[in-house]
Length: 424
Image (cartoon, rainbow, N blue to C red; front, side):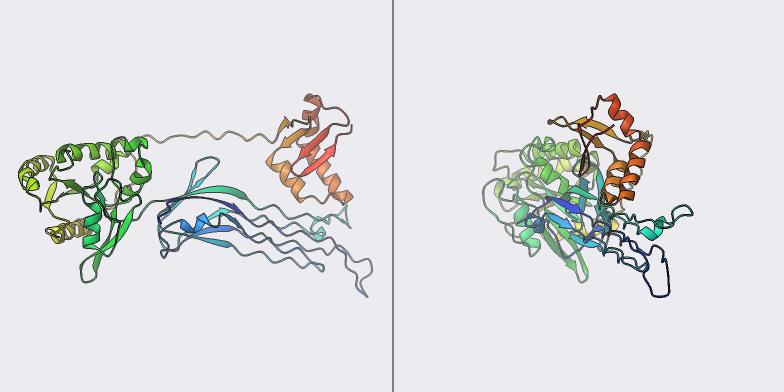
């Protein structure tokens, strides 16, 4: 089974809580605050493992959570930070934020890492809040919550050479003949519904990865059939072998097939149509193919394409075709990603410090990164913690904004996980 898309949820570790404590030692009267800081929560990290070639593992496990940091201790001892949680993905994995659709990472090389959720920092112990005017603080912070997000993983095959063409032109037969790959082969359309990889050995120490990309049809660039699912796998291939059924026994003209497939490639991604192609004129063991070959060869010569007559059934011509593909790979120069188009200038819009909405039950709900973080890290069982919250609440102008929204005494206000009754 080949799985090339998956959705997962990741949660980085929360920071450990700070400790509120005071020194209580025999010869240290009136010992000062001695609460240590909490440790940082663990990050969630994606790491490339070349031993994987599908995303199938994510069908069975979709939620990943890193460990939280250890709480601070007495005697100014800080809690231990949590280690990162590593999630293995195959090379060729593109990572998107599900909410925004933004591409976070394109993971292609063995051992490449990407932090997709950062652990929360540890809460500060009460020893950190000592000042010249406040010598014995009892307040300590809770740990900062770790980041959480939903991710979409998409796998694009990292094949060197891709076989493209209409269904039933013989791509599966070719890859089974030249490699140890064993795709399902039958005389009906769309036998291959998933890409198949095979390793082609040309000579001692020389080989390349060949992908049998499932058959394309008209409208594939618009997602017709399984168009987008198939086309994405061609994007990373360096050389394209375009397989044509020169016999025409399916009732289609091989030249028309060639034109239509290249139109689909061009409409999906202009670079694909410009990628180097060699033409495999397949089914040469049939008399009809012999009759059509001269016409197809003449057309391909005008197009500047190299044509190789082959027969997947007998193996004729396949060695020469694969050797030429290997030679072109050796000469391949990586495409430049530099664009000559005018750069796009993005204007950074200042983020609102908070917003206020109403719930169905009439409660006022305050959303805002700073205030929600403050609430998460405040210990409301401590009077100093409550005062600290009130200072932030007023400094951000939340109280004034609630007045403008018409809040009345006794109304409910929600911020993060906290809920309180409003009083003047």
